[in-house]
Structure formats: structure tokens, C-alpha cells
View 1: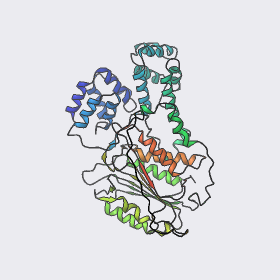
View 2: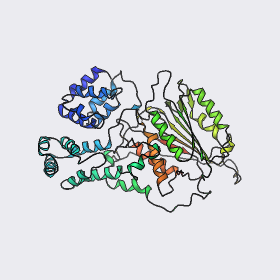
View 3: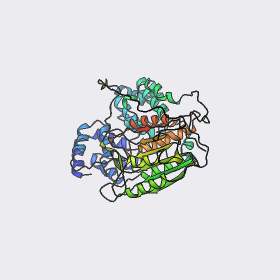
View 4: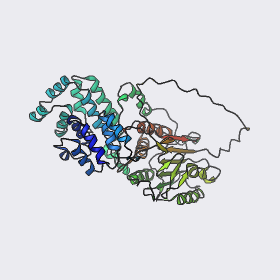
Length: 477
């Protein structure tokens, strides 16, 4: 990043704001490297050492969190800043939770918190703690709180501020995994991208609806072929992963994309699929591979999956030669008409690529919505009903897009993309659930979690489209 711009930002930040920024960075930068920092210039040097200033993404998150919209605008308006869709490490939900409590805690309640901690922590550091962030840092050093355990903080807040205690309770409910940490690491799927909670979603009533789709329900057996796609063959199907990391021209290297490939590879192997990865294909090579696959005999398999990880634009993805491949060129060759051995079988396409340059604006659920535009629809019947033993050529397909048309999507430069990592997490969670959670339920959860992830000043909104004619449930074998 431009040093003149960083210097201007440094001049506008006071010492308390610098301390807040250091606290927010303490999950990513070693605490000892943050000790003694007095101004933002020193912090920027530490950030440079960690590669956090290669673009404006991480600094934007920090300035957004401490409510310095003026400095955030300075970053966005800088003509030398190029558009960047790769995100640096995200601020954790845990760190944002503590910062929110710090903002909302009165001086009187801060004194109460310190009083309640006197028997639990060394006296001297506690006395020197002038802010809630200082207290939280000392509690972390004493092992009283961590990103996996904030129960002690919850108990303390219950004594004097039940509203903040509820905020912590919601955090605990939202981040507690349904399986043990050892299970979470099984099958090689990293649990690395934790969705952040927007301040508008901390009301307790809203969490009833969020959790409703995990409640037990009466379901039909998976062997019911009229209701479910049946998976009996071994292997279950073919999963092809096209992973484009390095490009020949102006498009940047897609760092972190191998984490997405590894997560998909491990997951679909666990589902009993044969996984076929392809790295760095040009547009021509992609189309050649698609043609080859569409002519393949799938009669001994139950499904086909294609995952494309690349840069993209509205309605297309890029080959490594930066030439376009339209989405229709990826999906249409596998229609029931053109790939008869896939007739009546599910064809799944997952696309991790930007579809434009717009960012999703964060909209608070507390805001009164405006008048919705009027919608009209017209249905016309142009032919007699087809015989019962035929299906539409475009049936049994699902297209899972990382983002809606014209908008960007985000990728962690080490741990992978928001969409693919959340998709793998939710598919794994559904596979381990006693309920028959189908792909529609899974993708709804992916939409929810990705859309509320903290990527200021924008959000990301995935978009699934499908013509599936039955429920699709993926299980480990």
C-alpha cells in the first residue's frame, strides 16, 4: 500500500484508537510484536511483516470496526488502489464480540467487572487496566477467556449487564460446533472461516428462526426413489475440480485456492466420489475437458459434480489465459439430452468466481424496509403434457454460485474462499446429522452464513439455482 496514504491515516488516529487496532490484530499478529506500539505507523510495520497490507482489505476491516468511516473513504477513494477481491485474514467473531462489549460497557460497569475479577487474576495488571480491552487481554493471559470459551465472561456480565450477557450467550450459541473439535478436523476439512455476527442479529428472538432448520422432523427413508435421488453405486459419482491459481496477464494469483481444492477433494472422497482435480487450465483446455467429460459413460455412477475455482465476471469464468468460458458452456453439455448416461441423475456445479465488481452493501435488519417493487408473472402452456416416463432436458441440475450476478466474492489468501469453505462445512454437518438434510437446506444455510460474514465494507451473497426433481442427500460411506 502507498506509504503516503498510510502516513495520512496515522496522523488521524489517536493513541486510544491505535490501542483498539492492536487489540483487534492480536489474533493475527503475535502479542509480543504488538507490545509498546504507540502510533499507527509502528502497527503498519507489523502488519507489513505479516503481509496484511498487500491490499486494503484488512485495513478496511479495522477502520470499519472502529467506526472511522472518514479514513475508510480515504482508502476507497485513493486512485492508486486497485480493485482486489482476495481478502486478507478476517477479524474473528470472537475479537469483534469483545470489541462490542468494550464499546457498550460503561465506566461504572467496567469498575464492577474489575472488582469481580480481583480473586481470579493478578492484582497489579488488573489495576493498570484502564479500558475493557485491557481487562480482556489480561483475562486471556490468565486463561479465563479464549475464542473457544467465553463462559466466564458471560457469568460475570450476568451480574451487572444482562443485555451484554445475552450478546455473549448468542455468540456461544452461534459458534458451538455440533461435533467435537477432533471430529471437526476429520476428513481433512479445515474449520477456518468463522462467520461474524452483525450487530443487528444479536436479538435473542431471531435465533429461534436461525436454528429451526436443525430441529428433528419426520422424513421418508432415503431408499424412496420417488422422493430422493438414490446413491447405491460405488463409486457414487465423479467430482471434477478445475482449480485455476496462476494467470498469464493482469489477473492476480488466486492465493488460498488450494485450500478450497483440498476441502472439496476430502469431502467428496468421503461421500464416495472419485475426485479428479485439474490445475491451471486455459479456456480452451477447460472446454476440451468439458467435452471429454460430457461424452463419458456415467451408467455405473449415480451423480456428477463439477467445481470451478477461478476468477470470473458476469456469466463467465476465466481460463488461466484470461479468456472467458460462459457458464452455459460448463453446464449445458451435461443436460439429459446431451449426456444420456446422466439422465435422471443429479448434476451439481459449484462455481467459486466473481461475477462482477460490485460489493454487497450491508443492510441492517433493524431498518424499516422500503416499499417492495410490484412483481408480475405470466404462465402459458404451449404443449400437451409429456409422457410420464420422460423428463425435461434441463432437469436434475444444480448451479451453486459463490455470489449473485455483477458482484464480487471473497477468498482468504491462506485458508480459502468464504463460499467453498462454508459449503464444505455445511455439507459435512448435514452428512453427520440424523436428519435427512437435503442440498436445498444445506445451500440455504450456506447463504445465511456467508451473507453475514464480516467483509467490510461489503458482504457476499451466494446464489443457488436448481432444476432438481428429487431431494438430494449426501452421506459419508
